[in-house]
Length: 383
Image (tube, rainbow, N blue to C red; front, side, top):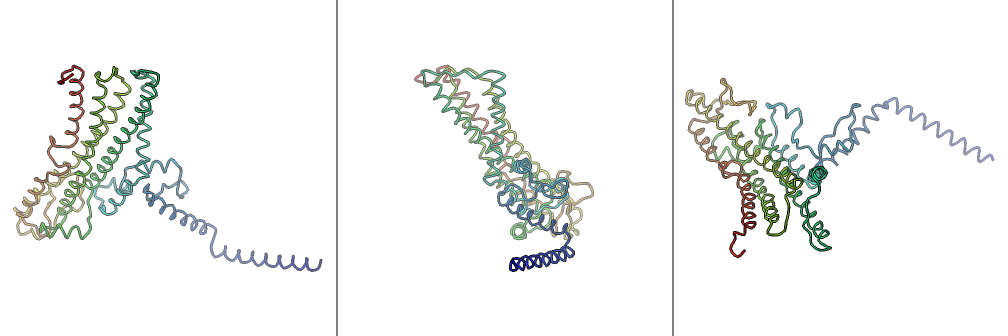
């Protein structure tokens, strides 16, 4: 009994020492500071996880100042195409670093965010199709035999889902590229020093217009890769038109199928054309600034060595009357040579309208209609 009492007294003494130590620690570090430290540690860890997944780099802030990680917030960030902060996106005079924008662009092209966006779009199309079926009824199925219906659905459903995935995969890549082009076009860009030095040595020019020319070159190279993707969905669309010919089966015109396919392809075509128009706007703005610079250099050749130009790019606003677009150390001949390069840039989305990939891709479904008509009227040799 005496040994047990001694052990209890020892426990009480250790508890008193622990309480005294905790009181001293709380006096030095209030609970709010401890909680803030815990929140910051958890937030930094979530930021690293979000950046690794390519979903977002900054969390949403709740009303209490802490990070909000609601599932809908994560979905919203995955579906977002914003490449810069909202405040910077509204301020057109804000200088953006191309390296940071490119990293965000690459992060949004990773597998997880792309899969989330495509799954969301395909789900919307399925919901649209179901609502149209409820309004117009199920499409006619010209099946033959007891296994015809199972074979038809077993082939058609995977084919339609694969088509929607292809359409929205190209749509997603095109829209994300469009957002990147809009950032370059609307804001003052800051390229890495190594990139600027390379083009400055080639063009013998430096200043804001050099950044404009690098923007155009980058747009041409990037849109050359993205614009070619639009051919694949339209080629599949042309094959689907031919497959619905009466020469193969008695397919009746189904409004749910026609409307659903039309919505998907018109969204893809509109996004691809918007990419072309946005790139052409960037070229037109750069051309205007170069012409202003040439006029100023010819009117005041002694000022050609002065560093001028539009500090706040504000590219959509154009060039005001009191602004000059000359660059540091640029003569009128140099600016005219650069203007010639801008006008002769025929690559990517800078090709003429008749040669734009969306316009050429549109000919594929039209050709499919022609082949379907030839099959229907038995106008091909041997039929």
